[in-house]
Amino acid sequence: MKLKNLLIGALMTVIAAPAVAQDLSADDAQKQATELIKAKNEDGLKNLAKDNRKNPQALVGIAKAYLAVNDVTNAKVYADKAYTYVSENVKKATAQDKCATYIVLGNIASANNQAGEAVTWFQQAMYADPMNPDGYRLYATATSKSDPNGALQAIEDLRAKRPDYPVDLIAADIANGAGKPQKAIEYYSKVKLSDMQPYQIGAYATNLYLTQNVQKAVEVAEYGQTVAPRSATLNRLAFWGNTDLKNWDKALANADKLFYESDSVKISADDYGRKINALRGAGKYDEALFELNKLANDPNMPKADQLFALKQIAQTYSDKEDYENAIPAYQKYLDACGDKASATDIAGLGQQYMYYAQQNPAKKADALMKADAVFAKLAENPDAEEFATYKRAQVANQMDGGKGLAKPFYDKLIATPNCNVARLKEAYLYNISYFGNVKNDINGAMPYAEKLAELDPNNEVAKQVLSLKE
Image (cartoon, rainbow, N blue to C red; front, side, top):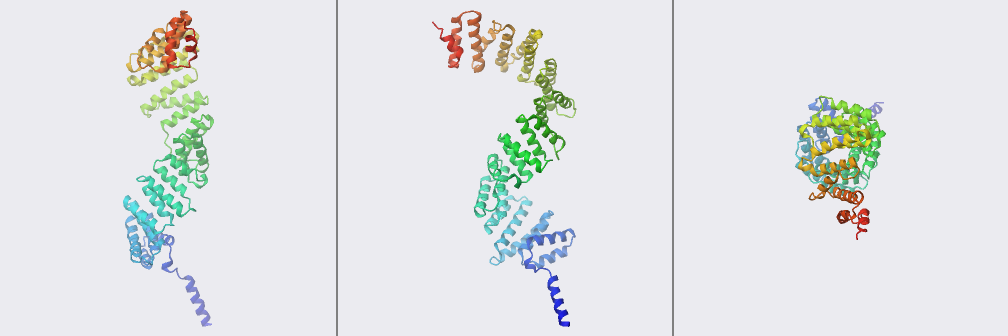
């Protein structure tokens, strides 16, 4: 009986005894060290390290536990112990021991902003254990900005060593971080979206959008929304992309997700501008005007954003073909710009008067006179003189239906050195019509036909007139 009890006791002792120190893995050591760090049990940590002084994996685990709580100093202490062991026991230390040691030393160097030293450690990890992907991955990440081509080559070396390892996603992240959108797309496209993290889906969609592959960017972003519905990046990309594609209803639905259902979102002027465009595109002019007036009257909005809103208010009225409101709204925008109004801005007011003239025959003459006054003033600016003259020619042509009022302006364009070719062609066409139809003088039209043919040999009007040449 005593012998039986003795055997049972011995068996229980074996079952209850902790694992031999030499067998403790890095992960298990990290877990134990993490609990001891939380308990502030320094003696326990010292004993754990003492019991595993010949186990570099366990020492690495302790270093990683300290590194996880940003205690780089103590992390370095235990990483150095692991390094001392693998250095003094070159034959006994395994490739895995060396690789793990070099990687934790590299991570510690990175935490200390010692980028060059970190790269050296990660490179040693690659050489120590060529089958461990962590060395390649960390080396590539560390060199992605300073040597992106070398970083991608390291990933390709890993692919050759470990064809089973998903290297494309790592390579995609590196190419993305290095600002190589086409290369990032090439790698991301090889990976299933379901295998990506939300930030990677966002990076893939962003690169597609930046390279003008808008339709594919939207498809990727919309998939990402099913995984991370509150991602501002994914919601913005779906919104912007659908706006560009003129999918107005989808764009507005995604605008709401961005504005009201995204985490940590900061709405930009571009976001507001695209929402207004989507509202206008969907024919929701009153909603667009409501949003724009909020922007224009918000005292906390930067001056540039308020000016943007005022201009868009005028444009929205114009899109509605409500020129009686568009014109004063545009004048309000110009007044707010003051002397910083550009030539293009000023020309916009003249264009609104021209639209109004086309819409309202009863007020056509008055609207065209006002348009001409705008362009006449604009012509005083030497940099805008040619354009303003061209617009005055068009206004005059609308006034008299091609009977001659526009001729002085078109002649001035013809005499302008290096005049815009499209404007010059229009001036020649006008004079051909003027001499041929108004003056019934085909010979007077001939020089303009010849000039037009020089600019546009296939122009049918020029051909017809020149065929009448005696």
